Length: 302
Image 1: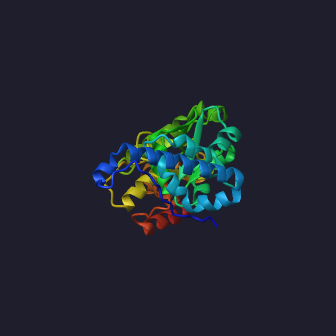
Image 2: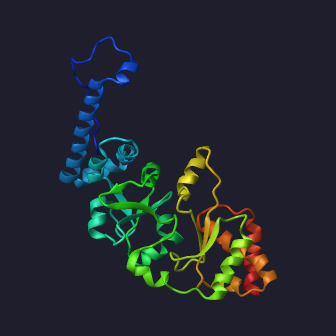
Image 3: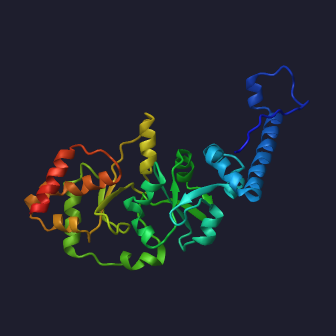
């Protein structure tokens, strides 16, 4: 049990007659605030070193509040990074950023992360498939506050925080051969067909480098808002741009090959299955679930 006690700062350097506006821009108040913040962060760091179990309890209750300091423009980011811990895909216990770069470093100098509502769903998301196969560690971000400071392109040491649900995936030498693979003409033709047929629903269609078992998935463009952050902002009635996402397909998947093998009229009828499948994998509602299930049943019988 972590005990929290109130405190009082005794100082003779402040006038008794002072307004709230003056306090907000008062040099003495700022100095006191910085000193208190440094002391509290040091105490948290010491707690982690001296009593790891008590720190776990503290972090469970107050970690999201402490990490708000990473979103603000201040001088305390490095101190917070020293003790902040995160769930990850390659360990059951939470790890620090130092542990990530020391135990799971990569030649791309990236700290990979994926964000969502809970750890189990993130581990089973299609965007995780390549990383799980290659045993590349990914931070599993479930605290909403992390959604706001990580996309600011902040670094930890020389490592960039990189969402695995945005843009192209390049994990270095491990997937170099797949990057250099020449795509057959029929695959290119199918992708071009999907681009045209689904142009009202998606921004682009690409052959995926991150899927290994799923048929398709949706990702955000490199310069667009991360998908889960967009959902969070929409849930809080914030105005956000209606950016279309990119549909990635696993060209070796049986469902993709089935749709690809159809004639033009059949493709026109069944190709949206791949888009709806990707939406379902994201836990999103379909516009017409009955139509989707009927099409799946029909496709199996062809």
